[in-house]
Image 1 (spheres, rainbow, N blue to C red):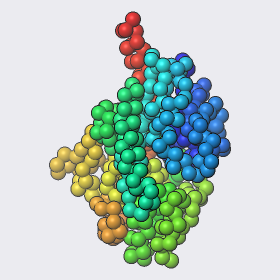
Image 2: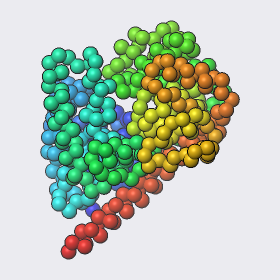
Image 3: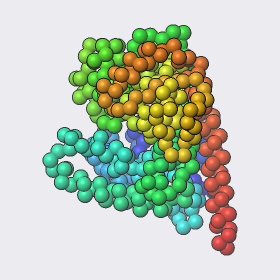
Image 4: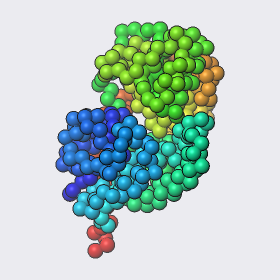
Length: 396
């Protein structure tokens, strides 16, 4: 069996690349196809595979401005000749799922979300003053094309596996397809609870528009509590200028420093909507409670003390009226992505702080450990392949 793994781009080790790393361990003989590869930007496990790139690799300035080439990506992903591969595993949040193989190939898409820029995060990326006047005329037409292509290309996938029930719901809405759910891995062994927490709160995030780091900064400007912010990205300078003296911007940190920051924080702040959200689980693996916007993936990963006030995504086991959620609380949700709502949640957390135990947070994180993901992925992909072979045999 010849295996091709298709990943949107390789420019750093984020959540999707942590999943890809496991796929590379499961299939050490697989070839990788990607639009763009920045050498040495991903782990040695990934780099050890043959990596094939698209013509976008050679565009000027692409290493930092690759999102500007979004309109070219659907055509670029279709340029890969995968006709000799039996199993295509696409690891997709943008266009990877649009890669095409031969007529009898099995294509399973591990989907982080339907194309984020065209659907769930369109407003965050392109609203307000983020887009210049020339693009305001072109953008709606470009996005209409991308949405159409994204929907059409889903027909080339045999089976979808989503990273959360939140994403499975989007796949159902945008593609009219059903998807199993397989939660991504969290490297829980990298983290452990500290001996005692500090006085600061913590944000760990890329500075992308939909991450809403500015909401956290403005909330803590009002609270006056110490906030440490780890991360970088396109909104970094704008958000940094908002912060008062109690907000400390640390940029990206190495693994050991990050583990110490998690273990030492009073609570972890998560103000954006994520498809799944690795960092809240890293915080819980460190024994720390999470204060999060009650939308998206955190509804499935954080046991909020006020969870009964928030509707879970379709397909996720819902609470019966009047029942208690099994397990101790590991966090608290707030309702609106505004500084006011977050301020209210932080003040409520401080009143209820004694309810949150490090042991409960750690137990919750271990449900999403890397070994569990690897075993579940192996079984799910193997069963999909076996069912595909049965379908082929029935046609003979």
